Amino acid sequence: MEKESYHTHTTISDGKLSPRELIEFAIKKGFKTLAITDHYSRPPKVDASGWSSGFYTESHYLQLKKLKKEYKDKICILIGAEFEWYSSKKGWLFAEVDKRDYDIKIISVHQIPVNGKYYPINYSEETFDEVLDLLGGDIKKLVVIYYNALREAINSKKFDIVGHFDVIKSLNGNSKYFSEKAGWYREEVIRTLNVLGESGMKMEIHLQGFLRACKEQWPSKWIIEEARKRGIRFVVGTDAHGRFDLDYNCEEIEKIIGENV
Ligand SMILES: [Zn+2]
Ligand SMILES: [Zn+2]
Image (cartoon, rainbow, N blue to C red; front, side, top):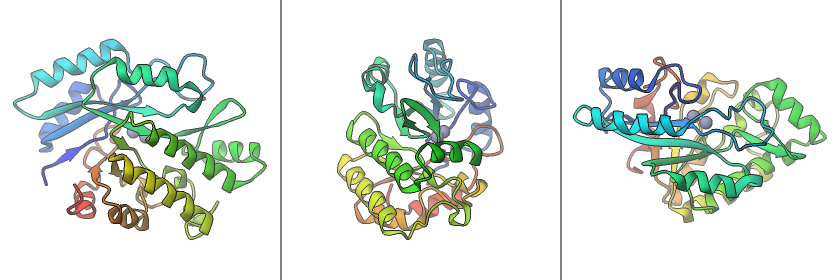
């Protein structure tokens, strides 16, 4: 498999390198394909802590188009975006998605809505506990809101790839909050995989979870096996935010992906 990543960030959102720096570095590292998939901005008037409204402007997009052309003989640059699912702002989101021509559209859920506000679910234990408290400490409720949002996003048929499918487990080191073996958890995952299988969207394999509290890949091995059974195809997503993680565990991801490209 050629060296590639379908999920990276630059200074267009919260990455450390400018798009040009990232491209130059990727060429040096031997990448053949690089998708630049910065976070899209949050909708106007949406209360979402920590999520900028300044991510990804029109001039950023035009800059990427220029770079794609400029480097076309050295590397295949794909212009992408990592969209966030806002169930209360679907009209806005769909209009934004359709506004430009992207090579790749990732949909991820990093925030869940509770009482009209969006809360991060993979940021820190503190913020996770805050949203859990709002839900009366009911972890099942929280996880169900996450997978519901993901299913809704998949069903919208607006996107190509699901980003870090089970990112909800980020802070779940040593099963602190829930067990992946619990019947209700498996049921949520399977329901979501069934929807994903029917959608034709691809699933990203992403190993940066090893750097987080969960010390596990996204998705977990058993989820990948269930996805394989459903004919879901995989892509490499390193979710690089700088130099150190551009090819983080790339080879390992390729082994996991095997034939399901
Ligand atoms: Zn993400
Ligand atoms: Zn990302």
